[in-house]
Image 1: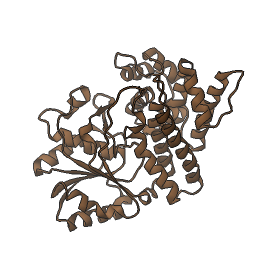
Image 2 (image 1 turned 135 degrees about the vertical axis):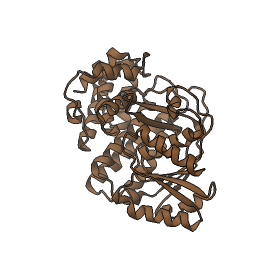
Image 3 (image 1 turned 60 degrees about the horizontal axis):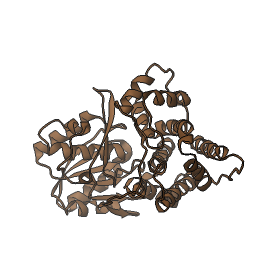
Image 4 (image 1 turned 30 degrees about the horizontal axis):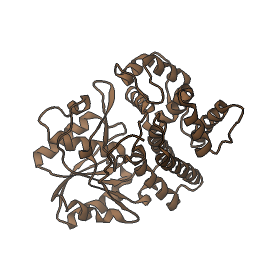
Length: 386
């Protein structure tokens, strides 16, 4: 196990009706708030509850609507302008990862005199406005993470930045708020949270039994409850398990003491940037292809994954068959969720952009941990994903 520091300061407020207390939570920090949301009709009832709660605490609220999946830099600029013009000291995100990441970027962008995109090219974040979350789409774990991902359409890239300063102060998690999610979005979110665990689980660090077991427990719980949601989309208990798993998958806990991979995410980000694909759908395509390409670099880890997560029986004559069966079951699970498992299903019909995406994913240096990958390797993974 490696040395590490771990701190997760986001207060989790979980359960039915908890969104009604959002005004009380915001009032601990400010009397003005920018409310960032999708601005879609399905949110109207929730937004009324939030507005009433803020009004009840005497909090003046301002709106920033129209956030889309794969959040773009233009909405961040717009939000920074609203914050500065109205001297707003707090940002409330109502939605999923794209909304939360937009709110985070507005927070550190508003405290900086230059272009906020500088932070996505290795400038460290030194200060930010506080943020809070009412989560409606469990997937990215951004409600309690130190990360933020934004797409830059002008540059044609999708980039991430991380800092403990940008963890939200609180996150309100009511599983009932996820009932209206379409099935595709629900299951893409489930792929995303599983990927957050697997990016940490597939590590070359040894002697990490506790975090291995934590990873495996989250994955097995997500798999079990995802299958329940296939049959009963409004099962509260299954929704609750999935929502909490999303947070635990990406608040840093299961990555303590170990190196991490993140190659699948970096490749997936470039697919999202190039084709505007749903993030979770890029991961359901890339993760199995990545696994097929790298498993021999740490065979024992993939054997353990197969046996502990998918209950594959150990093949005493051929460990490789055990590992490959685990990968096959992962891919079959994604198929049961009706999410894409090939680039063709994702809408990518040719390989003419593979090299461009591969070079952007690698950014002139190898990526990954289980196996170091260069642009040529990434192109081969993309070919496997066809």
